[in-house]
Image (tube, one colour):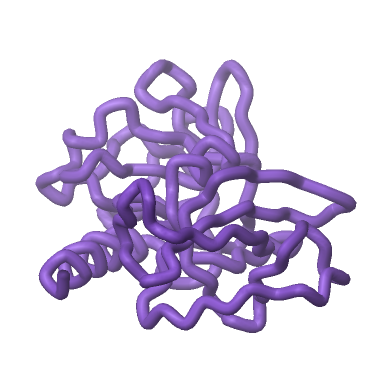
Length: 202
C-alpha cells in the first residue's frame, strides 16, 4: 500500500512540476503535442514563434509547457487562442508564444482534460460541497493525508466553475468497485486563478 502511494505521488509530482506556479491565464484549453515522446530527451519544439505571423522563432531552450512529462505522453501547452493558422500558447506559465496549427498539435478543452483526471485542492478552504453552490452549507470532509479526487463531471454555472468529484472513504487512491465512496463538488477555477492541482497520471 505504501509503495503504491509513493509511486502515485512521484508520478503526480512529476506532472505537477509543470504547474510550478499559477499560470498567467487559463485560456480556452490546451495545445497537446501529437507526439510528445519526441521530447523525452529534454529537447523542445523548434517551431515556436514570438509572433502570430510565425516568422520570429523563439531563441531559447527553456521552453516548458504546463503539463511536462513527455516520457508519459504529456506535453500540453495552455492554449489562449486558436484559429486555422496557429495556436496562441502560454510558455513557462507567463510567456506568450505561437505554434503552427499544422497537425503536430491537437486542441483539447479544459473539460476534456479534467474528465480524464484526478485533482487535489490547492487550498482546503475550497470546501467540498453537496451541490455546485457556494451557498450550500452542507460540506463533506476529506481527512485523507494525500488527496486524490476523481473527476466525474465538469460544469459552468452562473460564472462559477465546478467539478463533481468522488473519493474513497478509506483514502485508497485506487478504490475497489465496491469500496465506499463519497461524492461532492468543488470549484476548480476562479476567473483566471486555478484552484486545483491536476493529476493526469492517477
